[in-house]
Length: 423
Image (cartoon, rainbow, N blue to C red; front, side):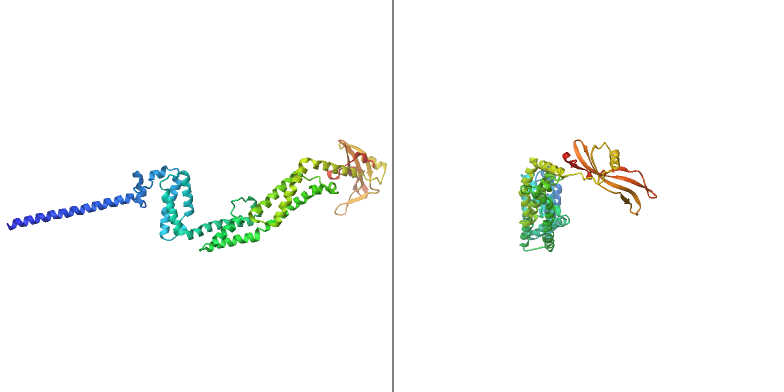
């Protein structure tokens, strides 16, 4: 009987042990399953990012990997996921400067444009706001440092080339009014960076020292154009000596082009760098006021008429000098040696009474000569030119036979009124 009770007790302990072991096994199994389930569904885990393509959708309603890949904004999504992954680490270590907040904003805007219905967009916007709230002061300095560093580079580039302002447009950061607004906004921020303040000081120096030089530069560039414009303006053409001072080389079209260009210089400088500058405004106003008058003068053809009038006046004033030597032998030499291919001789005036001895730099005699003025006709024009009768030095106090030599430079030739050839 005692043996029977012992057997029954031992059998009961065995059953109890199996039951407890089974319960423990069940707990372990359930724990492993629970952890596996948690690992698969967790949005922040490494396994989640590797395995979401195996399931149609995450348990918390976020987009699957397949949805991300198929999205038209997949590149922006990929980039923003990387930013968020790094940002979480930076945020924990209070290193806000490493968070690419500007890029994140750009990628969110890109997703809104390409795939506004993307499921992950609300979370991205929420994360962006969370980073902004946590790091707002530091982000102000990050953005300001980027802006003013770029502006400092532009300012130094401008210093090296003062004409660079001609490349400006409304978005150029070096525009003074934009800089002043950004500067004022930054200086009101509670936390300021020494680096940003250094950039602001550098830019201030450029505005204070370099930009005003533009006034002198533009004034110098426009000076001759303005003088010419005044000369050929309506008032200038009414002056008694206008025709006398008119220049054959004057080009109304070029003057108009220069006036428009320099007015543009003034406009850009006034708009972007020197608002309200009195001197530049005076120059621009003068150019703009005279421009219509010069354009009218150009288009009317009046310049050609004025030029023809001046040409006539000049031609009427041209006279062949009177002869002071009428030696027939010398006149015959001129007639003999004149190149008839140039035209027909109309008048010869020998204006030297004696020979002039020509020496070289060493003082040695080269030749002797007499000055001659002569008129010839060609293509219906009467032209006055100069030449010389020459005798080459042969040495020993002797000279060769005389011959005639014309000056070939066109600057010596003057057209004259044919009615005045013999006057």
